[in-house]
Image 1 (cartoon, rainbow, N blue to C red):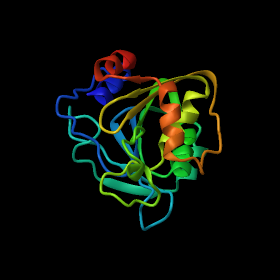
Image 2: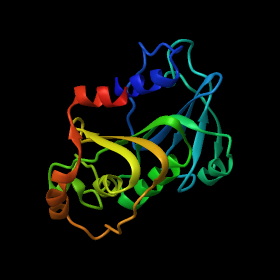
Image 3: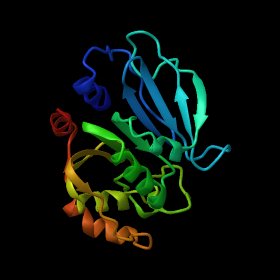
Image 4: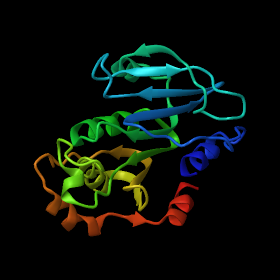
Amino acid sequence: DGIAKALSRTSGHLNFDNLRSISGRHTEMLLNDGPPKKFYFDSQTKLSEDFLVVMGNCEKDVGLIVNATPISIIHFEQLMTNKNLKFDVIFIDGLHHYDQCQRDCINSMNILNPGGIIFLHDLLPRSDIEQQIPQSYPTWTGDVWKVAVELSSSKNVDFRICNIDHGIGILKLRDKFEYKKMNLKDETFDYFLNYKKNLNIINSEEALDFIE
């Protein structure tokens, strides 16, 4: 619902009644510039470390998720060279590794339209085993909470974490934003527990208000 509401802020003519949930270890970049398109970036592909599948048009009035067909594959860095390609909503649910999520976030910030929103998944691990790298437990957030810490310290950003589904980050950018790298690679779950009180954690109703 939050992603659909974010899209409706900038794409009000679309009908999101049949929008399906987004899942999987990937980053999705949703673009509404002419016919609806979905850009799907999967860091676990066997084809390459970083790639984009450019999705075809979706069913009429369904939105940006249902029945899309891959039509081409391009390297992520090629996307960054296209200065005219910007996105209203980006959903990051990637490799669950701090360094990769940090890279996804910074790249996404640089191609976000003014007024756009970035969502990030898995920012609130409940236990040490859930955030360990490599994965050793079925429920796994990885250590992407470190990106949440950095975003909380970044300049000219509005950042909240909705306390649902292992923590959904909601990021808005202001002018002259700067992502703050803090070199947290070796920090432990105890660091997260100590820092958690500084995170702006909100409930689902507050999150929907913030998206508005």
